[in-house]
Image (cartoon, rainbow over all chains, first blue to last red; front, side, top):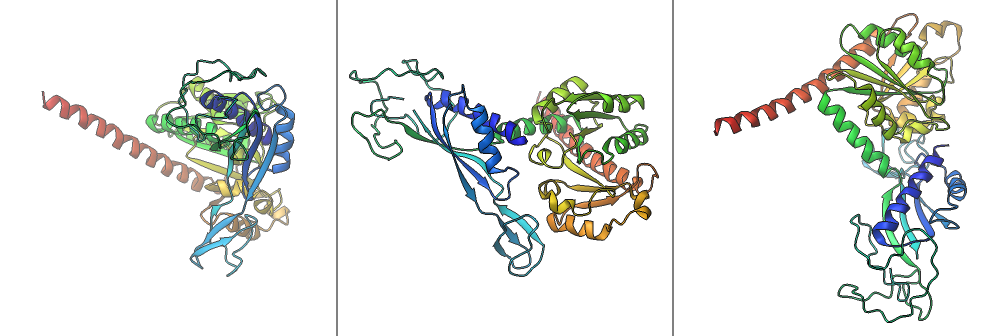
Length: 113
Length: 301
């Protein structure tokens, strides 16, 4: 359950941003979670809802934006869609793939007051 | 922020604190209205369009959107980068050993540290949820070790390792092994500042683990396939397992070994020694550059 410590990291980030950008409450938080990242969106939402009470994000809504997995295929010399890390290139069937997108775990935006 | 017009001073992320002479924004709830005239300085412009609708609604307390665009792991990654710098300056090769529970990490580490301690200084950071059994095992062979208990935590993070490095004080130009919590999932995402993640997979486990836990095999630089002395008693298909591992990570270096039988250990030790040479060469070059700078300063009088 590393989602728990990731959530603590997010709440810490919110505290820091609250000071830097002068807000006192977070209403909504938009997270970008890539399909190939090491985090499960449902578990992250669950942890956030468990940890948010008593913080400036008490009652805040979590919106998760999924980013698609992408890889560069060395054989095709182009970027292809990759839904899972263990998938082969959808075009040539090869495995010479370098992941180029979809491993993001980012706080994108906040609605605050 | 002004709650009347919603004019947040920024909509982009930045770090410097700015002065605010009205003291809200400290995490307590405050429902007071701002319906006094406000002529406080908003910079050159007034922004009414930073609320969620990108428009101003007269008379309504308006929330606003702030763009953050920060990695969730940014804090850990920054600490890990500091660890990496500290280790580089001291010429320490740090390896982060990860595996499932029961793969034989500690047994391999005892054997490795015991065999290498005569060649160069070695120390160990042991991560477990509870007990100091593993650090005790390492110390019993005469190698400095520090136990880190993560409590309910499922992985080591950069801050834990930083505190462990401060306390353990590994020797300059040494090799530091960090044995992570036995877990093929969570430690994959947490950079500790190591030179490489070394994933250990024993042949008593499933050969499809690289596909089941792809994040770890993608994050690792080396795969140690261990307990190979047991292969005659098992139906483990080595080539199939390595095929899966290379499918996830084509650049993965693979070594097969047995900590009990001893076969394959030399290749593992050679790999460590070569990586250590690279770390030392880089440190020597950095120190020479520093020395040159001092000599130049001296010559200029």
